[in-house]
Length: 240
Image 1 (cartoon, rainbow, N blue to C red):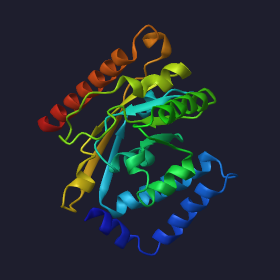
Image 2 (image 1 turned 180 degrees about the horizontal axis):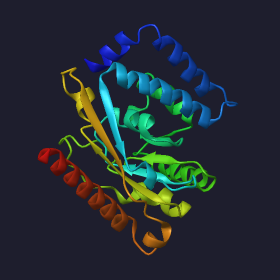
Image 3 (image 1 turned 90 degrees about the vertical axis):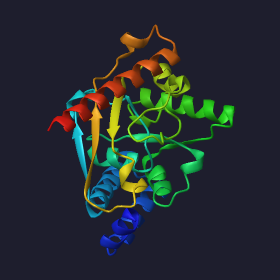
Image 4 (image 1 turned 180 degrees about the vertical axis):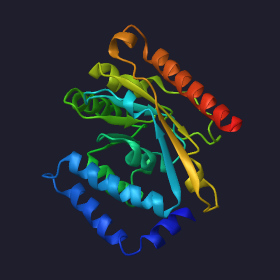
């Protein structure tokens, strides 16, 4: 219902933004920074039309230099929209094959140079891991959902997969844990009442801190930090 409301309230502007994003996705001369700028502008307007406020905190924690990976918990299709509006620097993302053909999301994938991963094809997955690592080394930022699939239990997390961190390990780059709160509500609930989605950018974990750790240990550490941040934020909200 909220998606319908977004499209209805942006009826005159939707074709314009769709064509701009589509053009960025098919024109190799358009940089991913420009693609991100357009996608961010369109997303911000769509979120406003859908009566969704993004409460983003901790942007000062992002590394000063590009070439890092964001690792948030995963609650649904709205997650990427929350980051497109709130993140102050461009990023691409890795998305599972099953979700890559959603209209508009497909065009955003192309405009940002994002990666589609087939989790059932080991060879293709390894190729994507190596491509992401290479591009991160070159200064591109990525967003990866380490749970592999969305949690269906509200703000509760499921286990983070160690393999999701292989690109960051190969790139020896900063890992930025991110906590999403209530990001499942915009598209999962039938209500179209105004609501707020919270994005918390936590302290980065630099290579020196995790270089001696196994990927499953890194996954557990990142998950634990996100869980603590969510618990603390919800407790604070309940006290207000």
